[in-house]
Length: 425
Ligand SMILES: *Cc1c(COP(=O)(O)O)cnc(C)c1O
Image 1 (cartoon, helix red, strand yellow):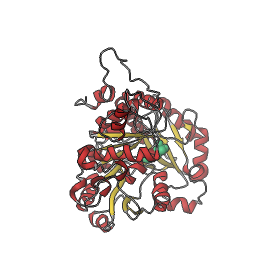
Image 2 (cartoon, rainbow, N blue to C red; image 1 turned 60 degrees about the horizontal axis):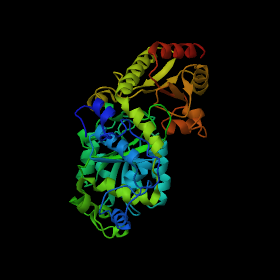
Image 3 (cartoon, rainbow, N blue to C red; image 1 turned 180 degrees about the vertical axis):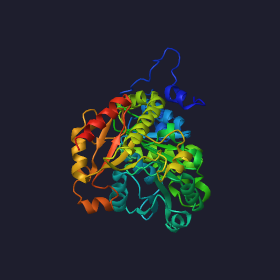
Image 4 (cartoon, rainbow, N blue to C red; image 1 turned 135 degrees about the vertical axis):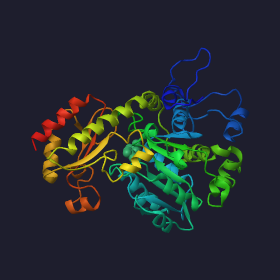
């Protein structure tokens, strides 16, 4: 059951106990499920009956959490994956194979960029990377006859560009392909991509959804709005699957076809399933998502406003700050706020950035972002350490760039920490 308001869906959607069953979502830590006859088991294998038979394909704890996230995004179905990386891979590979092509925004997470430009390229899938600020003509020029999808991040990590979702959806649909967006940073609390024409949403649930830095995970959600039968671009969904006795996903599962294929084909063959225990923890995080996300944003806005006025700061990027390049777009697509992530540069370049970071006491230096604890990362001395200053600038990650992920602590304590660290620069 789903409700009209996201707060209620965070708390209630996905799991509905029957009479006498546990009130809290149980962890079904079982690989297998018992049946009375082998005939029944056979029907499950043929997808003639629904039911659990092996946790690599489906598990009740995982499914309840997937259903909750589908409700939060306003989609028809979802599948959890063992990481955000797996979700990105499944979302594209579910409709692409060797010889196909994808148009992707260049402003995407580094791990996704590697997945697309190196690993999936080895599988024979080509990507054209376009500016997130492309106009309609530039977008249209990137398509080829074999293009099968458009991919972008609604609010990009780490560059914090805001996607013109309607424009990207329009270009995708004009070419008969879906728009897939990674909505990790805003979460469905701050951005609802399906309402602006996106067809598939993915998340790294590792970030705000889990929110407590306990479990790596991902999810793929289908809006159910894309018509896979409108052209012959998606034979994997619209023609018989030999590995399932000739089942045709769009015929048998209608709006559930895309997620069903991802589960029974990709999950069966690749097996990137989350552990039920991790899904239980993810569900606990989701129950308070609607409380945490506004607080992250409120604190981040105050940090951004504080830094903007500080003369030790060279520049600041926060899309919800008036004057930011993406301010108008953020107001349209994320009217209640963007996320808790702020990036900025300290005057004095790499050395000053390192000194600032080392002086922080509350904000922890970690390779993570978007959890309840304030944390900070200096890409030039960590994730992008091998690059020279010139290469860093070319990659859009200046040597002085600090990615500050504002937590939900008291804002006075966060600002005091920044203040004392800046005093050491
Ligand atoms: C972290 C992240 C990913 C990758 O997710 P993992 O859970 O680390 O595999 C993908 N997209 C975005 C925007 C991210 O921040």
